[in-house]
Image 1 (cartoon, one colour):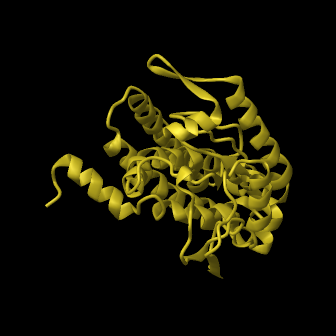
Image 2 (cartoon, helix red, strand yellow):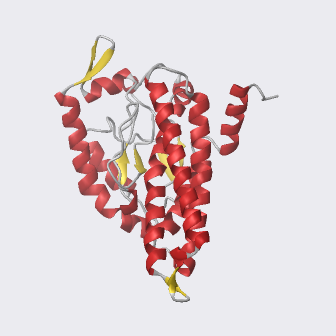
Image 3 (spheres, rainbow, N blue to C red):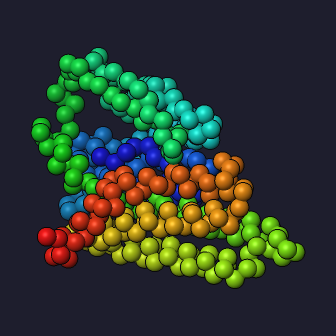
Length: 299
C-alpha cells in the first residue's frame, strides 16, 4: 500500500511496523517500503502464519535479497544523475522489475501516460497524468475485496505517516551536521561563522527539536505495535515533521549563504524536496483537523 520506491535517509534505517526503510538520502538513493498486511502480499513474500504471528521464511528473505540487488544495481547508482536531469526512466526500471517477477503483470492495454509534471522537488521520481481507457485486469490479480480499495488506502495511512516521519529524521540530522562542518571552516571577519552565538545556539535548538520528534515517533510506534489506535499521535508526528523540516532547512540554508542557494549542496536539495512532507499523505491542515477531532474541539 505504501509507495514502493521513495527517497530515503542516509544510513540503514530502522525496521518498524512491517516497514522496510533502507536508507541513504544524502546520496539520493531509493528504498523499498511496504506494510506486511494483505494476505496476498504475505504469501508472495513467503510468510506463513505461526499462531498469533507471521513467520517469515527463507523464501521471503530470498525475495527481499533479489529485490535489494536490483535496487543496488539498477537504481541507486543512477539517482543523482536522474536528479540532475529531472528524469526517471520508469519504463526501463519497471521492465526490469517485471522481468524479475516482482510486478505480477505487464502494463495492460488502455493505459496512457500523458503529460509529465515538472515538480519543484523530488525530481528523480516521475509524476505524470495517467489515463485508463477500457483497461482489462484479470480478476485473479485482485488483492483484497472488490470495492475496498479506498478503505484499504485509509487504513494504511497511519503506517505511511509514521514512515514519512522516520524517513525525514536522518536527512535533518545530516543537514545539521553538514552545516556545523561548513560554518566551522567558513570564516568571516577572521572567525568561523559557527563561533557566532546566534548560529550555534540556533543549531542547538534545531537538534533538540529533531530529538523530540525522535521520541514522539518511538512512542507512537511502540503503541502501534501493541495494537493501539495511534491516529492522534501519528498525525501529531507527521504535522511536526513537515513543519520542522521546513524550519530546519530554511535556517541551515541561511548559514550557508550564497552557497546554500546553489544546487551543489545537500541543504538546498532537502529544502525543496522536504516541502512535500507537509502536503503528501495528508496536508498539515488535515493533520490539524484529525488532532482536533481526537481532542474534541472540532466543531
